[in-house]
Length: 234
Image (cartoon, rainbow, N blue to C red; front, side, top):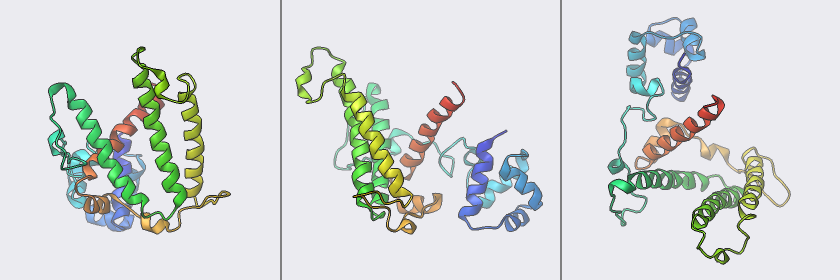
């Protein structure tokens, strides 16, 4: 059974502030049947899938969770905008994966920091930035250490200590982030002041960040695929 279909159907209806009764009427099914679709208790037929796609103005692939894009398109590296339009990188066959993933991450960070600016929390800004920097630092240490001839004195913290030290610092940052996001004010910290400013859905994000939305939803899809593999024991 396709769990993505039930999740996305529910998400689209709620984003458009439609009651289940109203959506069922418009789609030509009973409320009970629509409820079963949204809860994943029943699988719909092709006819209903097409009707639902037309009703919500999305593609069938999006409804089925096969594409992170509402219109079902697959993005190529050339369609992803540069995070810095003034800098154009020469992409060779061997560097396509690097260039593609760099664009996904950089463009998603543009959306992230735009949302972060609305949160009204110094703790969130400081700790999320610190968390991200620590993650990059940790990976940089691994890359640097791949060549044993590189001088480890480039870093102040000993090679064997740095990764676990970064993990500890990231865990503390995440604890503060979790508290601030939940409205809990720790000593010396603050919390998200105006959570309503962070209200977002697929439609509003696509409209507010037209250049970067594709990158963000593809980053989310790729990340959740990795998580699902862990939960499924692959």
